[in-house]
Length: 106
Image (tube, rainbow, N blue to C red):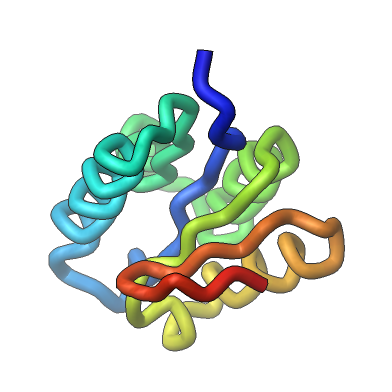
């Protein structure tokens, strides 16, 4: 069993045409760092109905984030409405916040 927290990957999806590759790189980086319990919304969202609205996707994403101890912000997250909502949720609820390519933690 890993001592690492359950972690949620957050980043731009709608505005990033290569978002799946970006999320999977982040997922692989976390696995390399010893995380075993990773929630990758790019994978989960790809299995949801295509007629879901952005608001419905966000409800699912926030529900997944509620099950986590930490969030991993992919580069470019600042340009995503959804990732900003997830970031604010994490800050408001005391989750550890990690950033891709940075040692920084909020």
